[in-house]
Image (cartoon, rainbow, N blue to C red; front, side, top):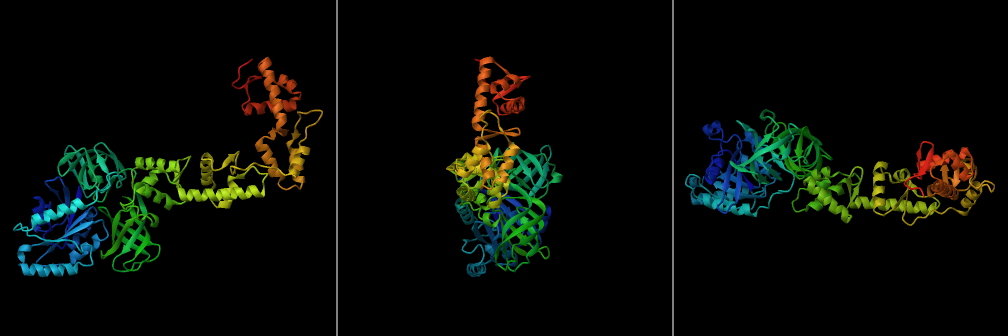
Length: 616
């Protein structure tokens, strides 16, 4: 289903045209019927024999009710611009067109109403005048159909033209997050609150849980109707009445939005804005018309725009509102309420996200590309890309498997592939340079990398973890290195540790004191000795146990003796361990605790057993 909207000067016959097309009088209020003038939005259902159908939104034409016209204009796809043949283009005709130029009208038909009030020659003359007057508007090139609702002339021709235009319209995004601007609110006895509007995108099903942006509330969909017919599900493009539970009718108003929970709600948003007929100040107070809402706010431009210029800006609203990327809006001045221009929701980098020509994958990639090195969760990506969160997660998994996006853990978020690959390349370059300069180091710490890259360390740690998991780099006990890196001490460094950590020939399993070794490292002027010590500790060539340092070969021999004793004689006491190793209690106690801590043994009272081993 699609939405047809009327527009035009007051008293040019919009409502009577809708009645002629549908059999429904769109004027709902007694005052409208008494005054013969539309004051508020009216609705009617247009159905064709082949099943093509549309909702018609009839808008008021009087200048005092432009705010009501705007409330119904947001969902229009096919415009019926109504111009009385006996009067021609009037001020309100042009004002409506100027407003609609900033919205989502895709096709238009110019209806020359009151055909019966002019003869053929007058009709030809007025049509030429109207074409000339509308040449620079959004209806330039649109077909003209002359109609008389009094005699019925041209009504069927217009119906045929509407049918053909509806068939040619692209389908709305039924798989996108639900977005329904509310233009009517009422209650039905025994049923509760009902909201109506044009379903801009998405599919609503009975039983769904959705959100209302004003007031911020979750609601449950009890039932659905489309022009009086009950439905279990309603897709984008339909005029729909939604019976909701969870909110009282007194809490709601025209301008609220019924939406999927993935839709963003905010009071500040980046926009692309095109000024209408005059330049604007850098900070411009506005009446922002979003969906069916009119919200006061301020447009803050990056640079003050000239007339008819498209600029980047931030729209600050006095209340939070639900919006989706690519949503069109109109801005008017506070007083007088002149048109200032219109734009779309979305930052400079995402201004084209609402373009239906883009695939969902391309849209997600555009969102991540615009985010740079700021990782986004699937919910945020879904909101910015205007897709359902479940669909976003499905596509992100697919893109991550291809390597097009990078998946980070704790928490799960995503980076665009280009930004992540560039960061990984910079990391690899630093690692390679550091390894060439100081080959004895085990790698580079995350803190050192973060400082050199000028990247926040918490983010960098998550990128490094993903790179290590994907096999791009190696992570070793807090150090990161290239895949090919094998730490190599210099001959001077090796000679120092052979001397400083030499085993006593008379007591081969006795360690050296850590304090003594560190003091010797500080006194010695050999380059990189401290880093070399860290590398030896990290690789197990040296082992710190309490306040002492053992060679790796010493620890291996001590462990061999420990395991042999336990397997031969069962759980071991501290005294038996001391004798098996041939050491003193001074060294035996920290050694035994070290074996407990490293998972070699398990303590039970005063004895130890091998963890996970059975006695022989």
